[in-house]
Image 1 (cartoon, rainbow, N blue to C red):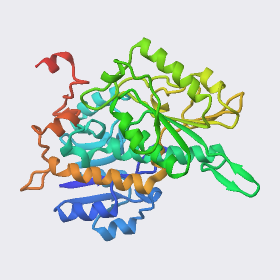
Image 2: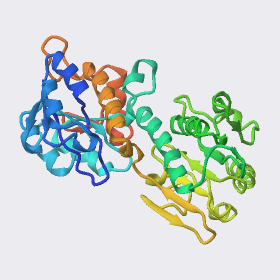
Image 3: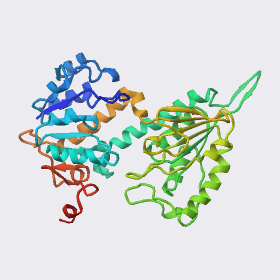
Image 4: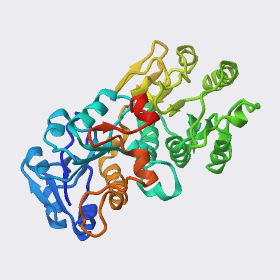
Length: 383
């Protein structure tokens, strides 16, 4: 199989879909891999490292894609990249399908087999392929680092001859992968950390990291988790009770990090404008959900908003790209783990295991048709 990796086109994207380490393993599996020149430069992986690992270096994206059986990317393909792919070619990326539904139709029209890494099922067998978790983990870490920079004060309590510096109070909203890493990072930096989540299982996880759990723990709270492990949308009554508790708590915090996302839906509002206005001058809000509308109505993508009362509200739309080397390494390993399900064991040709639950869960298009049930026409879904 001939595999292509190209340089990401998005202005804020520094990651790459392969590393010298994964290239070496892919070549050892009997595949040919072609890397566009400069594809890994922003992630500190120069061309000579890819070449030493066994990759071919192409002068541009067109040359890399030409003759490819499979295109590996971080972000969804651009129009010209897609147009260069012949029918039957595989494309694997973080496709953002809910945010780019028209693009899904475009993949079908082009006749490519498009697989969204976001849709890899969260089952034990697919843990090594779970790109959402690998990237969210780094995003949670980086969110706290960004918060510390904007806060401009120390995180730990420091006792000196000149007096004592109080520890920062950090509140993490949403205790999924990103939230748990944010808790762990803030704790390592010495902050007093509290956290909230609507999923009951999160309480024990938060406590295990040394943080205090904050939530209205009624009957609805005890049933607020889907079978897939995501948070359910809560009733208006519960949201009102939780908002009152959170508002009182946020007013005492120095830093708030919000991480709440529901796949395919706008991000829920967790921190209102009134809550921000109740915070102390110098406080910081980091909104990780800004790309889906934001958990705070004051946040704007990739902008630090200075409020009238001296609070900084920052929305980072692509935090993993601020850790390009590490995030690329983890994502490339996710792709490497997926590769056997896309390959014929004997011929090494591109041949997805269509009956495998992982491929079924993540594949968007096949043979010129949209096949994922979330996007396929009703008639096709019924059939």
